Length: 287
Image (cartoon, rainbow, N blue to C red):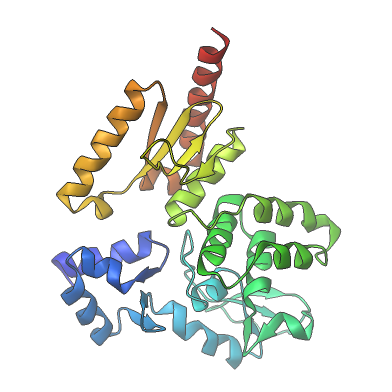
């Protein structure tokens, strides 16, 4: 695959491995999408979504070793976006399972029967498993996507967290309490995690007059925007965003613009910028 078609695969990967077909069509990628599906480089989930092949094939790998698809692999199977699609299927097998499978990311843990269905962790169990095993930003991306899908609800996640071993419970609850289905994609979810880590009180998609930034710390008047060139392929969208940033800045808001590569691969740099924004906001408030 070359040219625009190759760009399509990278876009799907950056979007968390799962993208609505209509969203790709709006970007003029309908033909490239159909070619990728026909060649097997993308698969269709539930008719409305396209995804990387790992979203479908991994469950067969789990069943072959009498295991259960888990973690981000289970999230992809449920049609949820993840921060980093796994290189190998993540599978939970019983503790006494002694076979080595180098093509799988095997975790040994005994699961209650109700935690899985059809060789895959249930939606609720998937969110809890990711919150238990992934770092905060990656886990938040799964929890956000799960809430956005409407297939899980916060109350049932809290109930499931109460059954998690005590040494993992605080981390799981942290993810559940900060999860927000308003976040648009894993890029925004991971960026929000970095903001939370430095002490910003951000909420996703909060309206400011007629504008809705990606995330906002209302009291400190800090806005964080996640800028993705792929989704700005339409000139009108690019111009609208520039006007929005300008209007917020002249209204006294601190606007931090983050790019995908930094959020996903340079977390320390992103935290440093967000700490500076927080300090500047607090200095302004004290003046």
